[in-house]
Length: 94
Image (tube, rainbow, N blue to C red; front, side):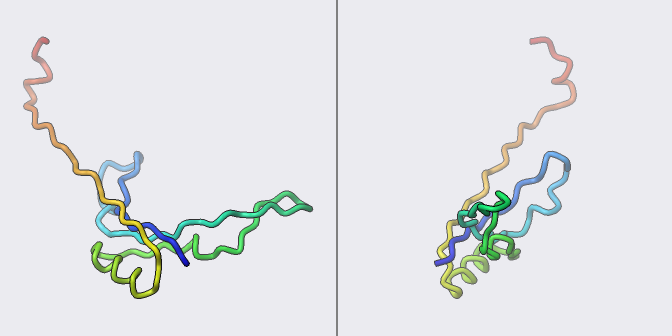
């Protein structure tokens, strides 16, 4: 049976905005790869590990996984905590 994870991607360290973090992603887990005895290269016949599907909601991703008999795990996003400070707080002595 195929195994996958459903999650919302986090923003990368290279970007300050959260533009590509709104869609839910269904990504298949990779299976173990084998080593070619002649050349020593890593080989795999698992093409599903290259497939990444985007959905507008978690419910749609879960529904797709259930319809296609995919064993899935939902990874909930962490809540962002905002610390509201004024500009004057930068100059107060501790």
